[in-house]
Length: 206
Image (cartoon, rainbow, N blue to C red):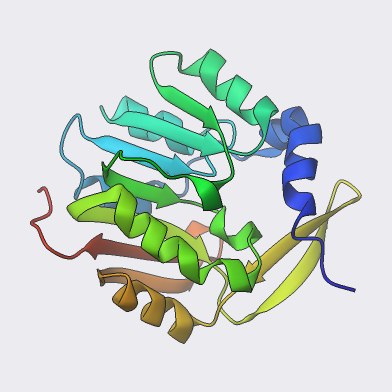
């Protein structure tokens, strides 16, 4: 039986308040976020794909002066974002289908790409590139080896999918990104596998 990749949106929609309550606010992610922001102009625009409730990632980006467009498939999570940060743009949408003419100075997909099936992930890198200005920065987390797993969160099945590290490198290169920094299983970031890259064709801020 195929792992329930399609169930992630349903889970996050039904239990938005529980997910928000369980989200750690200590911002141990800050070194990576600040490395990303070093390549986004002051008052620049950031697209946060899979923004969740906006705590603590979007809050930090906003407090550092960036203009946020947040996208999440859970109406409940987006409602929390709208109430917390009414001066920014929050949209209910599947990250896989977020299109349009807008381009941004930075794109972040923190612990969101990992909820897509492996076969859906390669196409996201072309989407990232379309949403970024030349020289724009991309920050995302991933798994560390190809496969699918289903964990348990509050008695519910929670799906995770991943490509191999080599496949992520190839996807970045094919979509026109230069890899700036990568750590697999970063012990200072909760064991996350993190990637920071730039879209080719322009100069980064800072």
